[in-house]
Structures are given as structure tokens and as C-alpha cells.
Amino acid sequence: MVTFDFHTKIYYKDIDQMGVVYYARYLEYFEQARTELLNDIGLIVTEIEDAGFYMPVVEAVANYKLGARFEDEIIIQTMIKKVPQARMTIDYEVYRKKDNQLLVTGHTIHGFTDKENGQPKRPPKFLLNRLSAAIN
Amino acid sequence: MVTFDFHTKIYYKDIDQMGVVYYARYLEYFEQARTELLNDIGLIVTEIEDAGFYMPVVEAVANYKLGARFEDEIIIQTMIKKVPQARMTIDYEVYRKKDNQLLVTGHTIHGFTDKENGQPKRPPKFLLNRLSAAIN
Amino acid sequence: MVTFDFHTKIYYKDIDQMGVVYYARYLEYFEQARTELLNDIGLIVTEIEDAGFYMPVVEAVANYKLGARFEDEIIIQTMIKKVPQARMTIDYEVYRKKDNQLLVTGHTIHGFTDKENGQPKRPPKFLLNRLSAAIN
Amino acid sequence: MVTFDFHTKIYYKDIDQMGVVYYARYLEYFEQARTELLNDIGLIVTEIEDAGFYMPVVEAVANYKLGARFEDEIIIQTMIKKVPQARMTIDYEVYRKKDNQLLVTGHTIHGFTDKENGQPKRPPKFLLNRLSAAIN
Image 1 (spheres, each protein chain N blue to C red):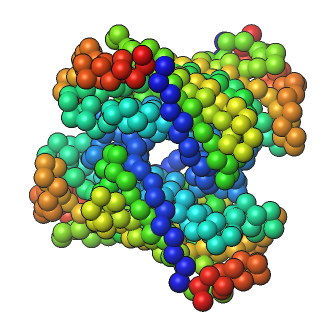
Image 2: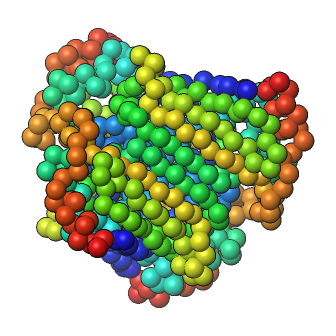
């Protein structure tokens, strides 16, 4: 398993009139967190794209237990549990920093497509190699 | 079943560098669509809140088949299939208007909480009545 | 002068914990409104881009008088007052529909650039012609 | 003058189909940056609100010179030049970290209102004191 803890903070832009983070925002935190997880094992998304690959989300799931509030610091614990065959699953657990309270869990599943024609494609070798090395 | 077709259009604000709608945006369309479905059967979210209830999302799921593009018109077909007991499930199917292509499916599950103290609460009678009347 | 009234409605996604629309969101409404103004006089932004032009914002200004609230309907009155030379100025006035209260005013100024290399470019003839015809 | 350098990074959520940050997003960075500037001199926005004050934006201006791109790191240099009388002006300069290129400049002007009734109010003493101490 590869894991990465992405730290971020909640601002006004994120909060709705219930006084908690608007539910769609967590998908943005997920995206930031997975970008940094990949970065942490030497996979730069820009370089993956420059190599001709997109990694579109094909499924996103979030389960909301408790809402983060303005100026809360949160940690998005991000995990890739196995080397993808065709699709890559990434898991997320969002914690409130001050008391380690679990707020949200979720996952995204990503396909790999050809940047030029949008067709499905096998994941690039260098990505599989990096992930294998990091997971095992 | 209660259904409502919410029509909207894709703008620059929605599109990412893959040239398609950023995946979190569909959760915003879902929210707009369910607000209008409820509105359509006489349930105004502001009035539900004024009656002391919030309807926080406890689960959100989206499955992405094809991306909408800039200036596409899309239809979010929104459905409530049964009267909620404790939680209310709402289903969504997003179609591209010009060719009726299915782009995204998903659902949200909503709890009911007390606006003042955040505690879980049974759904308000007037909401159950309206939904019962509309569904049956 | 060319004018267009863009109608939209405020949803949860737009509202912050002050209970009013988050200030950055008005720039999204401005974008939707100008896209529809251009559309209304036969200028499709996608076609302008297909012709090789981008119209990046070089200045955005908003003056906030009163905040729109959840489920308010608003009208973005959008104006182009003169045919652009190098840069195109678009003015906006945002009104609350129910009582015609002025909420926000603002403008954006747009450059024209070559889609391929990002260099400044004179606005396309067909755009100038359409705007001239519509303004005069 | 009080200054603060807020560091952030550009993700997919921020980028539009021109391949640069969508113009409204800079107002979100401005908000994050000013929250941290205030924080840095001991003014927590949540505490200002708990003391009964909102600081709504009454004017926002951004001038766009060059667009930040995906995975760019940017620095929002944030400045308060003088102690507010009725309104507080905050200035921003956004730089690309890797080459110190200036991307965007702007400012926001904030009023002070009573959290309960929305009426204009003089800024709180503790805020004026902190700002005075920090500026002089």
C-alpha cells in the first residue's frame, strides 16, 4: 500500500450556509491529495499527461460523517492499495487535525485514456513500475 | 416515483484542461436538480430549513461515462423512488441534450437533522406527505 | 449598445456561511452572462475558439452592494457599449428578480490572443462585424 | 505595512480549457491569503466573527497578466498598507514561484457589519489595535 497525508485548511470559499464544507468540495481535496500522493512517489501528473495519458475519474464516492468547519485543518489520508490493471482505485479518509475525528471517507476510480483520441489505454509502464516499487 | 428534468448548460467555469466538465461539478448539478425537483412538488428547501431541518448529504456517488463539453446543454433527470424513512435517496442521470447520450449517473443520500443542534431527526411530516402524494 | 439579461438562480453551492453568495461566484455569473450575450447576437464562444482565438480576461472588477441569498433568482444585465479595438469591455449589473434590487455591478476586460501561441492578436473580423451590427 | 506571503499550488480543479487558472479562482486565493495574513498577526477570522463582526467584500479587482498552469506553485503576496477607518483595503500580488514571474495583481475592500443585523459598524477595537501595532 502507498499512503500519503495531504494537509489542507478550510476557508470561506468551502463553507455553505449550514456552516460546514459543501459536499462537492471534498472531491477537490481528493484530487489535490492524490496529485500529491503520486508526486510523492515520483509520478508528476503533468509528466503523465505529457507522456500521452489522461486519468479521468470513472467513479467517485464520498461518505460524509461530520462536516469540517471554517479554519479547521484537515488531513486527507490517501491510499493506493494495489497496482492497477486497467483501472486505478484510490481511497481517502479525511480527518480533522485537532482531534483526529474522521469526517469523510471515499474513493475514486480512474481509467487511463489516450490524450489525443480519448480511447482507453493500458496504464503507462513507468507508472506501473513506480507504483509496484512503492506498494511492495 | 417522482421525477424532474433539470436543464443546464456548461460554461468555462465547469471545464478542466482535459476539455470536459471537472468531476466535482456534477455534484453541484445534482444539488441544483434536486432543489428543483423538490420545488416542483411544492417543497421549497428554504422553507424546510425555516421549519428547523437540514438535509445534509451522507453519501454521494457518481459514475462517469462521458464528459460534457463547453456549451453543451445537459439534462439532469432526477428521481425519488420512495418515501424516506430516516434517509432520503435521490438518483440522477445526466444526459447530453443534443443526442440524448448518457454521460453520468449517480445518487445522493440525505439525512435529516435539527438545524439548531445538528442531531438526527425524523423527516418533517409535510415533506413526507408531499412526497407520498407525488410518488403514489 | 448590446444588452442581454441572463437569468439564473442561487443554490447551496453558491452560499457561504454569511448566508449570501460567495464573492468569487459573481465572476462565474458574469462569464455565463457574457457567453449568452454573445450567443444572442450569433457569436458562439466555441466557434470563436475554433477560429483560433481565445478571449482571456485581463481585468475583472466587482462592486458588491447587497448579497443574493439561497433560492433568490437574479438577473445579470450584461452590456457591450462599443466595438472593441484591441480589448473588449463588458459591463454587468446584477439584480434580484423579486424586487429589482441592484446587488452587484462590475466589468470584465478581455484581450484577444492566438489560441496556438498565446500572442495578442486583433479581434476576428466576424466578431467585429457582428458587434458593429448589433451595437449600431 | 503588514505583508504575508501565502503559498499554494494549482490543481486540476483550478484550470480551464485554455490550460490556465480560471479567473474567478484568484479571488479564492485572495481570500485564503488574507485569512492567513490576519492569522499571522493574531487575528483569527472565526474570532472576529464570534465577536459579532462580518467583513464582507465591497469591492474586488483583479488584473491578469499571465496565467498560472497546472502544478505551478504560486505565492500570493498580501499587503495591508494602512489601518482601516470604515473600510479595509487589502492588496495582492500573485507570483509564480519557479521564476518569480508576476501573474496577477488585485485588491479587495472590506466593510465591517454587525453579524446579527447586517448593519455597517466600526471595525472592532482589537482589530484596529493589532493592525496598528503590526503596521507601525
